[in-house]
Image (cartoon, rainbow, N blue to C red; front, top):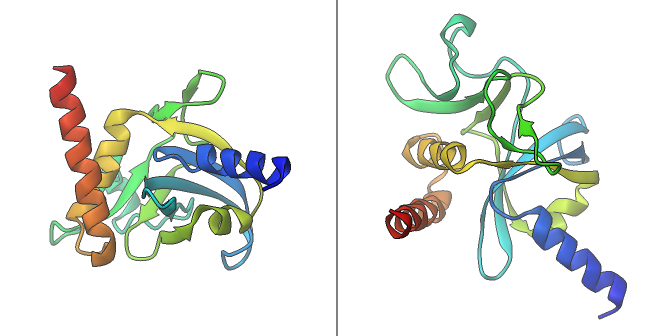
Amino acid sequence: MTLMKLLLCVNVIKMLSPRNVVYGFSKITNPPKEKFLISLYRSKELSVVACFTTSQDRAGVPLEQVTHGAIKNKEKEIISYVFLTSVCVGVAPDGSDYHFPVQTVVRFDYCFKDGEQTDLLSSFNSPKVVCKLNDAEYENLIYAMYKSDDTPEKYKPHFEKVLFDLGEKKKATS
């Protein structure tokens, strides 16, 4: 493996660490455009589960009912997760608080992308990490996805493992 390929692999591994929010021009969305991608889970084999976000009004409830966090429909089912601009969700690479620049929604019925890290990142032009979600935000997002009937079943064991690991981490630090 050449030094250049090795450095690329190391960069990819860091970029798609769980909790990272990556921003760049996505070539796989329709139409291609600037997108946020949140890395949710990475296996030992370096496969990754991530989700795309949207700035469109797609929370699934009327705008006046939108709050930060998990969104439930009138049947009380979790259908999406909203990041309000007024809420700090993590830390930017420079150490400052990070807020999404616009109200941002994760819809659980179509947001997921999985596969090899290099394949996922190669679908972006100039991707960069803009934030690492804080522990509470990451846990709340994963829990909402895990509890949602809209989340494809194939992802739920990964989210269950993440939640278990987060619980163990809390026990160890308390």
